[in-house]
Length: 248
Image 1 (cartoon, rainbow, N blue to C red):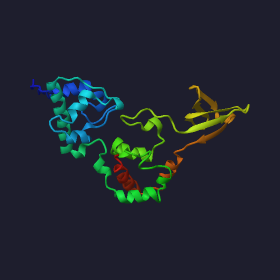
Image 2: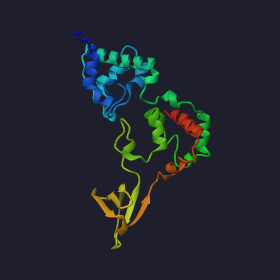
Image 3: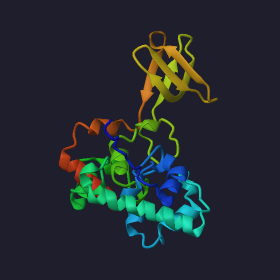
Image 4: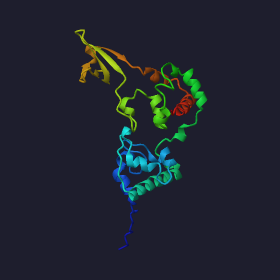
């Protein structure tokens, strides 16, 4: 009988096992992003870290405002986790063709000055938005594909929810007029050719057959949807480059 080839499983390092047990659900078992946490191999914090000086404090104290708890690792365990994260980043950087996500470098091909001109001119963005008002710091709050998604599809509700975002109420509102003349208004929850549904002022979910009521929908972000068919590739990349500069 021929000999059966023996395979040896790759040993799991202490840092890998700790990361997968404590961090893997949010950041993915291989640190490239998970259910609610970002890709750590594409993190500016990880790239800037020297010996755990950046990553360590974040792991220990957490980021409660983004839903991340702190982890009271011992010094040796903390070092092991930091080493694992940095090792994963080094591995991904060596094999860019195996990346599963779009990086900032992929998107950062535009001209910020041209983006500013578009923002103030042809794009019409400045009629509703201000770099010192609602957009102040947007380039720091969102990075890469997250920032791109936020200005292209801002009305996506929780369907385009990003890691660290707070749940967003649908900005689209609807007023339903019943056959009796009574009106009911609230955020739109669901609509198709048969049914209209909203959440009323008391928080109740209410729905009606569209054929039995009159419906008036107001979407304050409709201008963004209309703009999608007008952007050129250069417009998108230039506007993205400009928004990246709004970090304060």
